[in-house]
View 1: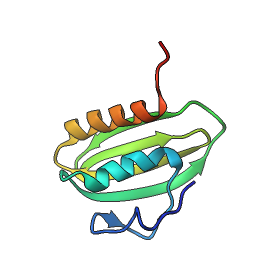
View 2: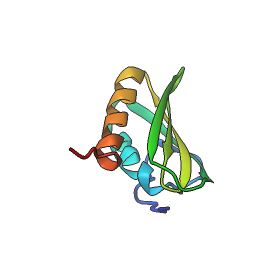
View 3: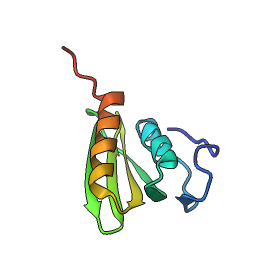
View 4: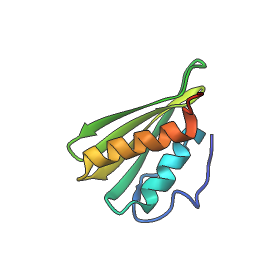
Length: 104
């Protein structure tokens, strides 16, 4: 787990929860730079048994709810945006490039 206040500062971030799992870092960094995302909420971390990494995007009225499953933890991120389709697709692709590299 990573605690970096430099990453989680700025007008897009809400709340006092400042901890995120390593697998969420590339998504948070990309969202911070993305003009179509207006607010980022970092959810709580839940420990789970060791399993495969995965990502699940759910479009909600305010934006996109992204559930990131790391090697031993799950965390939910909320990205407020009006471009739900684009965000769901591009952030799933980003996560897959970082963590789910397919062997040929």
